[in-house]
Image (tube, rainbow, N blue to C red):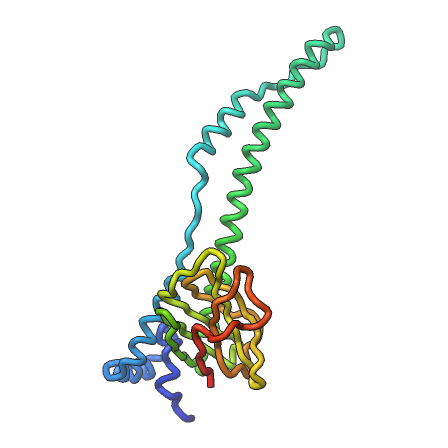
Length: 237
């Protein structure tokens, strides 16, 4: 069986997915190849960034608000037909207190749901990125961004996905955004997302057969077609 090109081992090496013999061969190659050394460093930084899950703690006042609302909740008294006015007055106060407590709990629950969704999304992104980087045919290409920064694209035909890493991009005005494109053999550009700045992201959908990756600066919300000249244009083949 033909041994894989040592330059294609970068992704599996970053994920500690190489067998011992290939790891030894690749580490020997790293000692003399500055290109692969830079690539390993960048992909490790991307993997760490995706693996880091940041949860947002509830507001400090949340517990105090809940406890305060609970203190105002009173058990409803027994139904006494002889004192309808008292029953109505007490019931109205209890209902208002319960409503206040329910509102606070709803806010707390919303925070928990948002944190769960963020964590689930991060875990899914980790799995998708690992699926690309661990492929034996994963290839990495780099390109400079006009005005500063760098774009890196990892492509795997076997996984039929790509990972894009944008680093040290110039800050844009509030009404402008970066837009990502995949360019097919017919030179048609397909939008694959927007970025406010630095980004590590798995491109959704198939990128098989795409010939280049493009990065442009567009009005806020993006454009149907890329505005030229592009900030970066990186051949993928």
